[in-house]
Every structure is written in structure tokens, then in C-alpha cells.
Length: 181
Image (cartoon, rainbow, N blue to C red; front, side, top):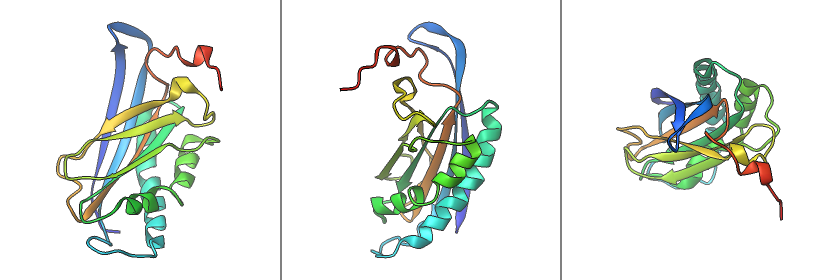
């Protein structure tokens, strides 16, 4: 793995919609910028990226959990592939093996880990979807954290993101009357 840099973003939400929160919501994301080993080429076997994703997930989650400072309730992951790549490369980083270090770091994680992947130029923001770590139907925890790398991904790079939160949306009211159709 050719790692160029890591970035950690901390976000504390204290008020939303003109109203103070009863308890602040903290979100933390870890981003890694790596060289794309498949830049400019189509490869059938992407399995080498599976282990890279697991390694990056463990590296990023260790620091993300430290920065969160509270037990993680929600989690999510995302990737931005530079323009010499394709979406499937982000999927190869995120889906097969990154879940294990994420679930270990949050102390469980029964629910799927929401994800987002896109191909874009340097400086493009990405919305990292967040969902409750144990209850996929917890509507009050459907949330996002928007992050970006000003100089990445370069065309031959990939940005991988993991994110956690210690709560749901700032003033959740949707899940209280949830009806599943």
C-alpha cells in the first residue's frame, strides 16, 4: 500500500435549526489517500485491495475512536476514486474486509455499514452515510457526514473514509412514529 496521507475530521453539533441540542452530537471521520494500483487500467482481480481496505480500516478506526471519546453509536464508510480509476475500486476497498476492523473498533456492529463510492476530481466532497451500528431500522440515526481532501484524490489515487458518531441526527423525530410498510 502506498499511503500518501491521513486526515482526521472532528465535528461537534451543538445547535441545529436554531435550537440548541440537549446533548451535543459528535462525528469523527478518518480519511486515507492512497495510490491507485490500477490507475488507467482495467483489472479483473481486485482482491489485493481487499486486504488494503482492512489494513486502512484498522489504522483509521483506531484514531477515529480515540477522537470520538464516547462509545460509537453510528458508523459509515466511503471512497472517492480518482479519474483514472473506476467505482469498483472503491467497492473493493470498502466491502469485502473493512467491516471487521470497523465492527471491532465499535464493539460489535450487528447492522450493515452504510457506504458511498464515486469517481471524482481532487477536492470533491463526499457524503459518508451513517447508520446505527446495531439497528439498521433506527431511522433517527440515518445521517451523513460530508468530508473532502483539498488535494485528493489525484487522478491516480483513491480516498478511503471511515466515520463514526456518538448519536443520531441533532433533533430526531422521525423514528418516534416510524411505520414500516
